[in-house]
Amino acid sequence: MNTQNTTIKNFSYIINSIENSCSKAHRNPKHVNLVAVTKNIQPELIIPLLQHGHTSFGENRVQEAQKKWIPLKKQFPDTSLHLIGPLQSNKAKQALELFDFIHTLDRPSLVHALAKAQRQLKKNIPILIQINTGQEPQKAGVNPKEFPELLELALQNKLNIQGVMCIPPLHDQPEEHFLLCTRIAAQFQLPILSFGMSSDFNSAIASGATLVRVGSAIFGARA
Image 1 (cartoon, helix red, strand yellow):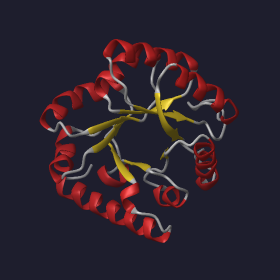
Image 2 (cartoon, helix red, strand yellow):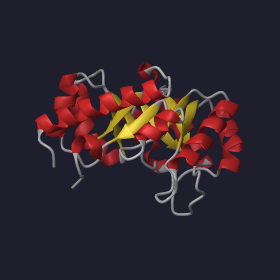
Image 3 (tube, one colour):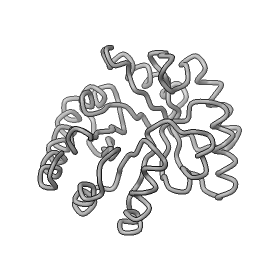
Image 4 (tube, helix red, strand yellow):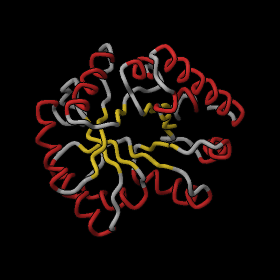
C-alpha cells in the first residue's frame, strides 16, 4: 500500500501521462476528467488528494462509499462522487442520495428504480449506460444491440443520460471496445465516454474517452 507522499507522486505522474496522451491525440486535456478510484482505499490515503485539490472520485459499492464518503463529503463539499460498479435496483435511492454521477445503468428494472428514486428525492444526476461490448455473460452491461431500446426507456423515464461506459474483456485489445462505445455515443449524440483504467487509459484517451477511471496506478495494489 502507498504512503501519502507516494499517492501524490503517482497522481501527478498520471496527470502528466493524461496530458501527454491528449497532446499525441490532438485533444485538449481539459476535456478528459480523471476519476480516482478509491475502492478498498482508506480515507487517510484519499484525504491528501482532496487536500491537493482533486475533486472526482469513484467507488464500486454503495455501502462502502457510504461509510467513507458521507463524512468526507461534509469535509470536502466540492467532491464529485462517481458510482462505477454494478448497482442493485434496491440500492437505487441510496445511490442517488450519495453519488453525483452513475456510470452503470444496464437494464430496464434499474431504469425504473432510478426513476422512482429520482422522483422521491427530486434529484437529477448525470447517468451513463454501461455497454457490455464483449457480450460477456458474467459481466454487467447492456448488449450493444439492445442499447437503443434501453436508452429510449431511460429518456422516457426522464433520466439524465449523458453517455456510455464500458470495461473491455481482460484479454482483448481494448481499442476495439473503446471505439465501439465512441461510435454508439456519437450515433446518439451523447457527450460523455467513460472508459480506460490504470492499464489502458492512454489508449482510451486516443479513442475519445472523456472520463478515465484510475485506481491502482495512484493508490497501489488494493488490499
